[in-house]
Image (tube, rainbow, N blue to C red; front, side):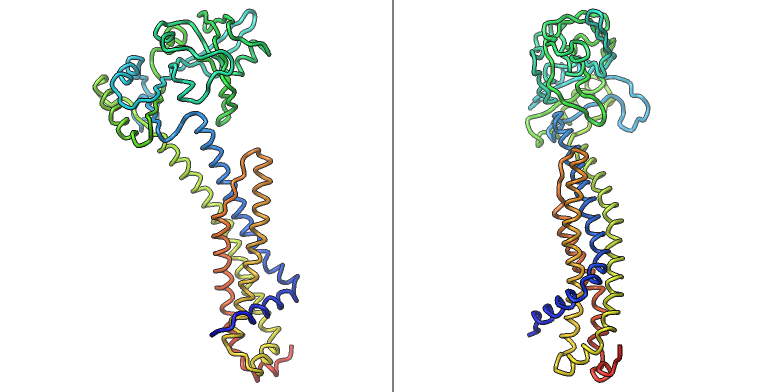
Length: 398
């Protein structure tokens, strides 16, 4: 049975006796592993942030989006979806949870001497706070009865409330939206920004008032959810059947949100993979440096090898010792690189005010690659050391 303990001890002792050279030798591995851990962790953090932001708007795997026009049409689509389409979908679809049309237009609000143009002016359904997970924190949202009765009630975002009313509650106040009088009945909870857009710079009115107030009776986008993600394929088929029967052609396209999530994951994974591959080149460079240092080490320790062989050391003992030294160098570099990469990822994500997601899988694979690099680049120097003739080795003068 091969003795692995003694070669390990000798290899460890040899590295400790040349601390500076050992540290310099590991630099390539340290840099490579640290770069991989940092970049992959940042990629995972970015992915987590984007998916959390999307999820905060109700975009889950149980939801689908219906857009007018053909999917591969790059020009501005003809808006073919109408309020009557939403009525038909509500009446005929099974397992429908929420249905939220979006009538988009310009919204100029006037309150006394003050005026403000909201970033988003939308005609929506009462399902909005549930579908998009943004409920009022002051006042309430309008009801289905108010939508059907074309009541002139509006709900605004925090940014609009601050611009027009300052620190006072706007609930109960009267404003004009595009010269149409409305009562403010609620203020939405603050959502912050999404992809650089202020999602609180918004005013919402009942969808039945979109023509009067926003000047459009066409839906820009329709968002709906079903009870669970297993019902999504059935929901897609039902939507197509109902709308084609009404429009007599497929002048719309459907996106499942799981598809969107998968696309985001694929893009971020590809980017992470590319930058990680670039960083991994440092491991290759580090491996070549290790091989070079190990060859120098064999030359420097020729007499030591000769003495060990003269007193009974086998070729396998010498071979294992030098392979162990190479592996110890790379694994030490990997451990230091993981620590540096983890701290760097935490620091960078903290500065960016994003959640740090440490890529432990990347750390595992980095250690595995470091082990393989150490083994691969340590074999040739170890073979040279093992093949030395003990007589010639003893005669060698440094």
